[in-house]
Length: 333
Image (cartoon, rainbow, N blue to C red; front, side, top):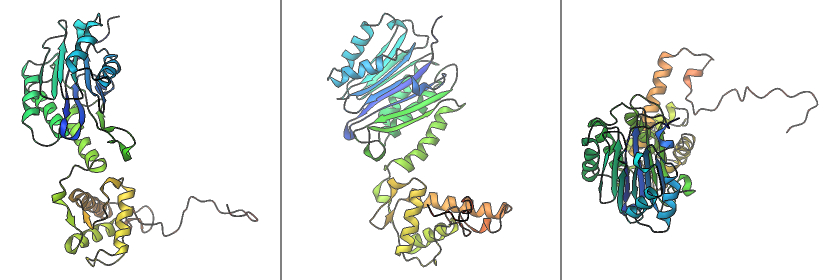
């Protein structure tokens, strides 16, 4: 049985200033993020597609790890592969060198374009404008590598993208110690495996991931927690049940403790600060949660007495109802 081919457009890139490698990809194929992107901090990044040879990923990274250049990696991988005419490949190396390969039997339209620190490639596309738009957009977009990768992906879709439509997308980026709590190098790894608008969904998920896991906000936007900012935080924390004090606008230890608990319970440890300042994204998130909680109390009938008067962070005034009563003569545990 002939293996399935799938139309895909992708970009692999290197950001020298932060030593970050990344890939963005979209396809009319289920879970494209499980097939196309490979990257290793300090080595490089690879996209393998069309009739994808997934061994290109680990084998190519092994070569990149040895300092082999992107063009040479492409040459070695494809020359050793009897099925190369149906393959497509994009590579960036540890120095930002780039190279692509499009096999002669890849389904039309298929092609690629490379530039300084990036390579764009695609097959079964609406036309050559797809990879051209990706390349020009990556070169001209401001921000960091993540902003530029997502912009390039969206630009490719605006030019028609995969001519069969959309199904899945992924964004993958690595940098030394970039993973959760610095435990690995996987800085960003998000996927949309099946969706009618996967790029837009990928961007939506990235916004949440960015606010929760990353620290990309401009420090110049930090707000000092005092006056109206402090009072607003106290109010919103109060609505959600984390704070029970008065709305004084004074950021006292009780207010700080309530805020710290809120950050921990909502997975915002990355946004915690000890300098008396707060990121605007957290202020806005807290305000939106408080608004939603107020809406809930206004329009939802209570299931248990007092349920609507307490936020999700409030302790249960009746203790834990799930703990069974002790039997006579039983000791504590």
